[in-house]
Image (cartoon, rainbow, N blue to C red):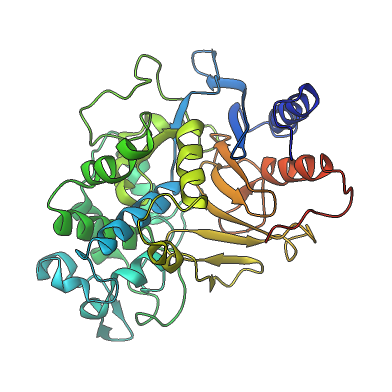
Length: 387
């Protein structure tokens, strides 16, 4: 058993977190929570907001970014479990024709009538990615990111994100014909959830997940009037290089694909519940999220709202796999089955150095934590494999 709260392990994990600042000047602060079913350690380093020299605390909230996709997909699967949503039915059965019209054009054909929820959640729909697609500008920003930077205070609504995609981008392939990460696809998925549940996405998430699991520090930024449990302390400030990304209301465009604010404790609650099979009444719903699709990157796979990393293929032979989700701002919520450990936190910086994936890298802190946990086992050099 890993002794997470032993003085030696706590110090080693704190040192690993501190090194993220020492060796990467882009990073100003970070949080880390490592937990087993019996034990937990929560740590912080650096500044929550360098503009005001506010120190980071382990319970500080941060932008979840694309970890939101894992929550959105799980919310959708809870609707599937209740018989309200069919993953393989065309989304035109749930959304007005005007909402999806013209969203997926490829090769001279239109395909929006063939889009399904399963394709949207697994990134196999072929729908363009508003955040990543299109020719970059001289600063390396995609056209949509450039639009956000041009109007940083704009509050984006989901239908406006779809309208921008419709005007500016074409689909990547016919539905089911490949894999391409798509934030726009998750905006569509969020609209389907709202239509099926008859409520706002954040209220569906709250009633079906957050309230049940005790995730009192998680909410949809710019969409909820409620005050989170930690509201007396400002959300920590994420950055894109030198840009205070968290100060831009235009990040509201993320919504179902990346709009949640959370903290490491709440993500740990979610990841442990998911790993321990406590979210769904019927584990068949959970299992539907876990078939892994190749993404085109060696060792990186995708399910329904979940990423999986084959650690043997990624330079850590004998470590098994790692699954969960990561975010643009080097946030991470991951489960390591080999040790029954969850690893959650953030470095609050998109341009922090990363590993495992070129397109959407994982914080370098994560493999450092894996190595520390492995070294703590009595079988040095040989994992205690649990599957």
